[in-house]
Length: 394
Length: 90
Image (cartoon, rainbow over all chains, first blue to last red):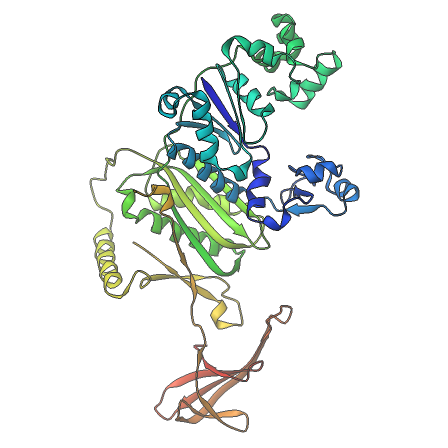
C-alpha cells in the first residue's frame, strides 16, 4: 500500500515549536518580505477569531486585534522538515518528500517488520513525534492516501481498503484535488462540489471544458491515480555556517563570506573528493526570519570558482541584513574521477606548498589558527568594526 | 551509532579584527604621560570618535597617538562611558 503522511501548516508549526509561549493564541504566518501583504497559515485559535489564510494583513488585524504574527523562516522550515524525514528514514521508511508537510512511502516492507499495516503506520507517526500533529493515510494509490491523510485526525492513521476507494472518495470536497482555485470555482458554478459528482461526468467533456488539469483531476476523482513511490536517496549533506559579529548587508562582504564557506566545505574530509550536485545557501536575517535559495548544478563540480559563480548572484536577493550565513552541499556524486588538465596552471605548486604550510600551522596551534580577513565595513570610524577574521580549513 | 553525515555541520564564529585591548595609562591633565609604565616622549595626534549614537551602545572615544620612550608608536583611547583606557591599531 501507499501511505501519505501530512503535517498541516508545517511552515507555521515549525517556528511555533520554538515559541511555546504562543501555544493556544491566535497566530498567523506573516507575509514574506517584499511580497503581497497576505497572511499565510494560521492556528485554530486565529481561525476561531475569524482569520483565514490568504486574508489581507490589515483585514486580519482588524478582525482579530490580538493576532500574533510569526516571521516566515524558510531555512528553519527546511531544516525541521529534513529532521522529520530523517526520523522516518531512521525508523526504516524509504520516503518520497513532496513538500514540507507531505511525504509518501510504501508500507509493504515495514508491514512485515512491524507486524501489520496498522503497526507500521503507528511507527511512522511515533517516528515523527506527537508535537507535529501528523496524520497518515494509506490506500492502494497516492491520491487516495493523500485524501485519507487529509481527513484523518491528528496523530491517527486512516486506511482505505482497495475495494472502498471509490466509496471513500465520493463524498469528499473538491479542495483535496490539485486544482487551481479558478478551476475549482468553475466546477462549483457548474454544480460540481464533490469528487463523486466529478467522477460521474464524461471524461472527454471534462477534458474539453477544463483542459489537462481537469482531465487529471477527473482521473484522480475516479480513483485512478498513481500507485508508485520514488524514494529519495538520503542526502549526504555537508553544512558550514558563519556567524557575523554584527549584521552584514554589504554584498562584497557576503560574497567573501560565501567564498570562505565554499573553501571550508570543500576541505571537509568526509567529502572524500566527491562533487556536489545540489547547493543551498541560507541566512538568518536581522530582526528574525530567514532566507533560503537552493540550486541544482547541471554538472556536479568541486571547483570553488564555479560554485562561487553559481551562488554569488543569489546573495543579491537577500531581503535584509544577515546575522548568519549557511551553505549546504547536497547530492554528492558517487565517483571522484574527473578529467584533469594536461598542463598544470601557473602557481598551482606554490598554492599546494602554501596549503601544506597552513595545515602544519593549524596542527601546531589549533583549528582556528588560520583565518581570512574579510572587510565588513572598511569605512567605519570604529577600527574593530572594519574587518572580521573568518577561520579557514584549506 | 554512526551519525548521519548531514548532522556533521560545522559552525565557527568569525571574530573581529583589531579588538581594543585594556591598557594602563597614567595621565597628565587629560593626555597620556605613560602607557603600561613606559613614559610617553611625544604626542603625535589626537582625535575624537563619536559613533552609533542612534543605538543603545553609543561609542565615544578620545584617541591619542603617542611615541613611547622605547621608540614605539602606539594608539590608545579613553572610552568616555567607562573611563577605561585601551590600546588599538588605528
